[in-house]
Image 1: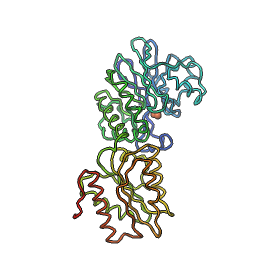
Image 2: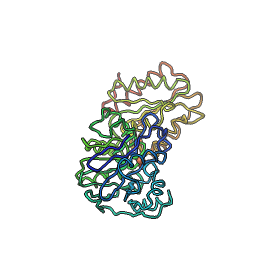
Image 3: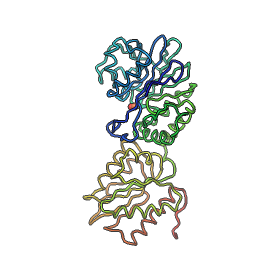
Image 4: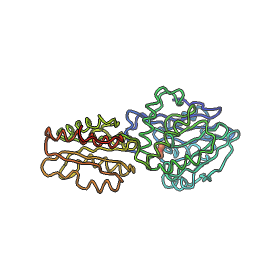
Amino acid sequence: MPAVEICPNVYWIGVNDRTTDLFEGIWPISHEGVSYNAYLIDDEKKAILDLAKAFKTDEFFEAIGEIADIGSLDYVVIHHLEPDHSGVLSTLIRIAPKITLLCSEKCKEMLASFYGITENVRAVKDGETISLGKHTLQFFMTPHVHWPETMMTYESENQILFSCDAFGGYGALRGTIFDDQCTDHSFYETEALRYYVNIVAKFSGPVLRAIEKLSGLDVRIIAPSHGLIWRKDPGRIVHLYKTWAGYAGNPGEPGITLMYASMYGNTEKMMNAVAQGISGTGAEIEIFDVARTHVSYILPSLWTKSGVVIGAPTYEGSLFPLMIDVLNMVAVKHIRKKRAAVFGSYGWSGGAQRGLEKRFESLQWELMDQFEFCGAPTAGDIRQGVEFGRKFGEIISGGSAREDA
Ligand code: FEO
């Protein structure tokens, strides 16, 4: 996309990435894409804020070239060293060797370890300002939103917060960079949540601290490193991030993530019975087959909903391996304080649910109910599954389970 002027002499010079399949080598974005937003302020001193992933170097330099000669740049503000933000840097400093890199003290160390860059690097202090001429930049340290070196920049003339990963999301930009011109907010909000839970959620404490720290600034525009630029309603994305970060400390909204796996259809049959039981209780439910759904898409439901139902068969005396993978990622992402119920089939000796209590204890999940059945579910088993779903649905939705239904 061509460069876009956000405010007088402040330009978006980002690039869309629609070819990377896995963000961070883990998270699918083949269908959604992602943008690497970067910005250029064309003043007496010229500064770039944020960069892009290495394979986008040519396209990124073309965008700069629309506004200014690369050799004329004075500063690059490096908010974050993760290579989706910094990949073009080595090439940039070969072309513009006199450019000064402004970053946090921690980032200075990381520039050396990631890229061997040690010259023309200036660590800025928290709250420090520099004048570009008409535009003044103020730097704020926001460690662990997302990596420890992360910082943000506030441009006071136009009241723009360049927020780095914070307030970002997956989703390549579809022709417009602005929230007020976007006609598909639900796509960007869904992808912002998926990005939040995949990338940022473990750092929810630092996110809340950063929001609090910056709450005294008058922010008219939020310009993150990924996704839409929020100029009509910057409060919307702050509200969403604050809400999502809050789920780190509480079980989330009433609702159920039902995730299951089935080898030959027996656990799936029971899953439908359990879902039927839940459906009468008013509890919101999302259902995922873990063998066919990447965990990236399951995590947002697990993060935001207070209840989890796991349906998985015994596999070689243990829980079905793909369900173990999901629970391992749940532990990595610190998805805690849930209420859970577990069911599944077994062929001869069972074992899927062995050790779950210990796993749940470390997650601070409360195991509310569990049952297993042998082979194909009988009519009695199915009735038990419906009742199991109904009871758990009542618990999650806040109703009382009726024994006579
Ligand atoms: Fe946009 Fe932490 O990478």
